[in-house]
Structure formats: C-alpha cells, structure tokens
Image 1 (cartoon, rainbow, N blue to C red):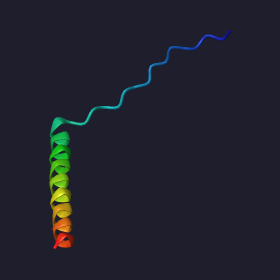
Image 2 (cartoon, one colour):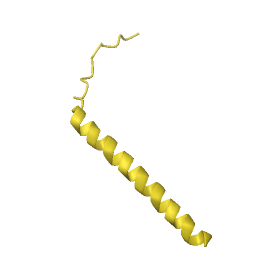
Image 3 (tube, helix red, strand yellow):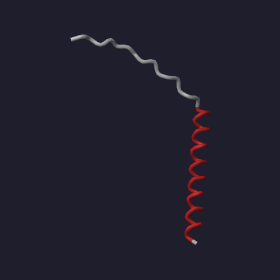
Image 4 (cartoon, rainbow, N blue to C red):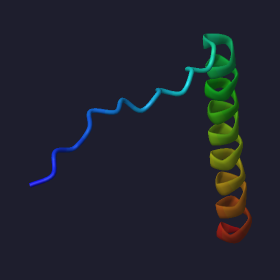
Length: 47
C-alpha cells in the first residue's frame, strides 16, 4: 500500500471581527425588513 503524505492544507485567514459585525448587522436588518414586508403583505390581503 502506498502511504499518504501528511500535507497540511494552509487554513485561510479569518476575516476581522469588524467585518463579521457588519455581516451580523446586515443579516439582522434584512430579517426585520422581510418580516415587516410580510406583515404588510398579509394586512393588505386580509382587508
């Protein structure tokens, strides 16, 4: 049997925390906007 070489794959550098905070805020804002638009949509057709 051929032995596999132990080659470590270099790990990609992690993004800085500031970038992840921006992503988190963007996800939260998008979620609130989508929920609000769904609520408006349901109110429009409920009447």
